Every structure is written in structure tokens, then in C-alpha cells.
Length: 516
Image 1 (cartoon, rainbow, N blue to C red):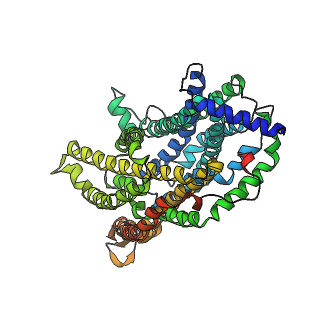
Image 2: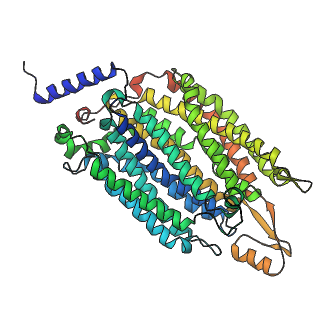
Image 3: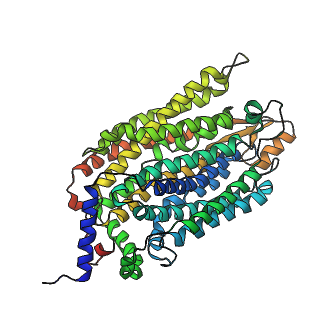
């Protein structure tokens, strides 16, 4: 019986993939593609770092509340929601221009243009004195992160064809390293190089006003750099023509969305989704509010930026060290062992922040030489434990994902895990002001719950005295919920590791395997 042309193509692809897996990796002839991917992922991380640094700059303004920070935290959501438009990026393109370049080029041009626009108005959006325009800043950086998430989808797809089949594994290295490098550069340069205190201390022999570069000029520079690099990629990098996929192009979008629904209908996936979305509540305050509270307690944004750079190195090294512990059949057992330590760490952060004002200056003298090593140790433990849990979850997702639709399945599970972080981040920041109670020293009956009431109290030569600190109350609530969550779900998560893989397989009547 003669096989159809489609079956022959599938057989050839299968044979090619099998040959590739048996071939040792060798970047000879692929180094240019490797560094191009690293560059593209670094460009992806850059706006993420800038957006994160903007939150730190906002916190340094005394008139920015935690409710404002909660509004701004919405800018981090696009990477957790990209599953909603990923099938569109994967299926709609201009064949002559290139499947991935059809999205990559306009998206990166748009990021550059928005950065230039933000630079032109940054003095009004983030004034030296006066209230920052939180809403407009949130709009701008939400759109930038939305475009960066779209760029991530396109680059992830291009990596599979840009590198040789036996070198595709290096794509994850480019992704992890590039995004970390870009994020670190975007954050560190914006905070440190625009800081008058840091530049006078390390770069100038004679003290000057402002940093060695302004936020305005820096955003202009990043925007122009984005446009220049995108132009060079568009002109000189050719994309492979995978025209054999054209037959499935028109229906792939609909089928991918239907496939997501089929996965979500699985009982085990529904339970796992609930567990992942609620898994970050126990340490939401620690992960999202502690850094800002350290600034309130007296730690400078420059010192936090330098420490954050050290933490980036920890994030790069940790996965390689713990890989052998998460590659076994029961990665969630390791995850569950870490949870109690993460909850105990909440107490460590409460103590660190409470005693920070006294520890930085002891008996009127600078005591930072003893304080900062302790802070770095605490933050390093937090990052290591967080990374161990993250890698364990990814390893578990890899084990249970239906191999027929691995890309879509993994993206869905990762989205659920990311949502667990994002909603708790916004909620943790938003609840600080709600849980904080202040009263005016002149009149205990009147509170300082709003900026107007605070200004009125200060105008009458009074002070707003904190009677209940929302951070410590929120820490207590999160810890209690975290303990309840742990004892409620640990048996379920352990049982998931021993379930037959049939519980995770998608039973579909539609023909989707040919399109994956």
C-alpha cells in the first residue's frame, strides 16, 4: 500500500529528529545563531528590568503608596497571560517575510518607539517633586511587557529552526541566560547610573548633581538601540522557509484553543490548577513587599540594586546544582520539603525589617558592614529556596505533560503557575495600605488613612503615628494561610506523582497531532 505524501513527510521528519537526537551537540557553524538568540533574549529581558526598576524608583518617592504599587504591578501580568495569544503568533504570518520575523520585527520596533515616547514625557510621568503619574506609567510598561511577551513567543519558535536539530537544547541556555542578563542590565543601569549618590561615590572625583545619565536620556538610548538592532536583524538574518506547515496554518489557531480547553477539562489538571494558583499565598508578602519595606526602613535603592545583581548570579547557578535532585520521579516531594522553610523565612524577614533602622546605625555610627552581609545571606536563602521550588514544579510539569501536545500543555501549566504569583503579588501590595492603621498625634480620633488627612495632620504640626503596621499583619495572615495550604494539599500533590499517566492524557477526537 502506498503511503500518502503527508505520511512520507512525517516519516522523513521523524527520521530526521531521531538522527538529530543521536548526534552529539556541536556549535561549529551555529555560533552566530547561538549569539543572535542570546542577543534576542537579552533584548527581551531589558524592558522587564526597566519596568522592575521603575517600581523601585517609585518607592523612593515619599508620595507613592502601596496601593499605587499594586496598580503598577499589573505591568508584570502579560508574561503570565501570553497563552491567550500565543496560538495567533504561531499561526498568522507573512510567508515571504518569515514566520517568526513577521512578528519579531514589528514588535521590537514598537518597543523601541514606546521607550522613546516614554523618554519624551518621563519628566512629567516621574517628576523630581510632585506625584508620579502611576496610571500612565502602568499603561506604558504594561504595553512594553505585552510586546516583550509576544517577542518571547516568536523567539521561542524561531529557536527551534534557527539552530541545528542537534543544538536545539542550547535554546534554553540562551533563554535563561539572556533574559537574566537583560533584566539585570535594565534594572541596574537605570537605578545606579541615574543615582546622584552612587555616581558621586564611585564615578566622580568632584561631586555633581544627578547621575552620570538621566532617566530621560537612558530611555532614549534603549529605544534607539532597539530600533537599530531590529533593523540589522531584519536586513541580514534570513529565516528558514518551513512551507510544509502551510496546510495546517488556517486551522491551527482554532485547534490550539480547543486543545487548551480539552486539557483543562481533565479532573487532575483542574485540581492542579487550583493548587498552583493558590500556592504562592504563604509567601506573597515576603516575595513582593519586603524589598519595598527595606527601602522604607532605610536601605538605599542603590544598595538593593547591587544586591539584586548578586541574586541574579544565584539564580543562574542554582538550577545546575539542584538538577540531579529534581530529575527523579518525585520532584514534588522536594517541593513540599521546601514549603515549611519558606514559611519560616517569613519570620526572618519580619525580624530583619523590624530591626533594620537600629542595625544600620548603632549608637549613632554606621553599622552597615555587619548589616548587609546578613541581608545578603537572608535574600540568598530566599532565592535558592524559591529556585528549587520553581525547578521542581517545572520538572513535574515535564513529567505529566502529554507528549503529543507538549508545547501547548507545558505553556498552559506554566501559565497557571505564573498566575499564582501574579495575582498574589498585586493583592499583597494592594492590601498593605488597607491593613495599616495610622492616627494623628494631635487627635487620636482622626486617622491618616488618606493623603489629604496626612497632609492636614502635618499642616497642623502633627505626626501620623502607625498603630497597626499592615506589613506585619499581612505576614501573619499569609503565614497562617500558607500553613493551612501545606497540610491541606501535601497528600494530593504526593499522590499526583504516583498517578498513572493516563490521568494526564488528552482524549480528543479532533485531528490535532498533525498540527503540533
